[in-house]
Image (cartoon, rainbow, N blue to C red; front, side, top):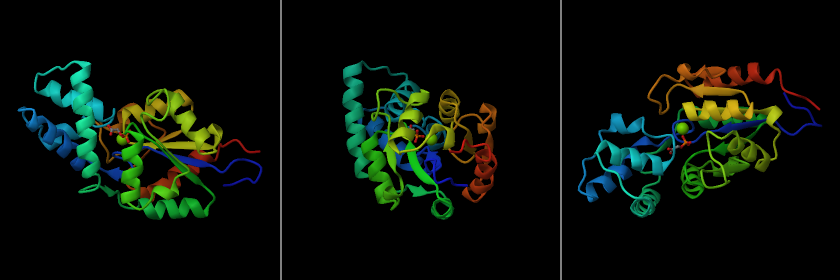
Length: 232
Ligand SMILES: O=C(O)COP(=O)(O)O
Ligand SMILES: [Mg+2]
């Protein structure tokens, strides 16, 4: 699958709901903040599908579910408290999905490189991947605050690819949400969706190029999509 004259092919992963099951820690932080503010905690199942647009959006959605709207100053204050709490509990209950490490091993042996393009803030993203023991496997870990644009802007993916030393014509996005699929489409990069992440509608609804139910299926999906990769 590799060509010496071209950059190594690149897999760009979303983080929350794709590489790592982080919802328990994200929602616990949300609920810690809401209850501190005298508001109602959001049941886990409802809050799980509120993940995907970043922690600030999660916070706003949690407030809205309580019928509360706050101004920018209060939101920023809550958000900074959110990040402090979350960083202290970054991997209490967060784990890599089954098969992630084996999949990375297999692709690495075949000459692929890896990057992360997430709507999580970059700092906690690096912290989480470090706690999970895989941070050094990624050529770039890019978050919502890394560039001037974030997902679903295709620029977030294109900048991530550039930072990782890749070529958009030899890259594939792997994500769990509408946001990821739109991002990949905007950047004209093929996209594989996992069906076990955080989305209110089934991921098939958003028409990704392939859907996988386990990381063991990633190899076959990528093999098909990368057959058309530009070479040289
Ligand atoms: O934490 C979020 O809301 C989004 O993170 P993701 O882009 O890695 O899914
Ligand atoms: Mg996600």
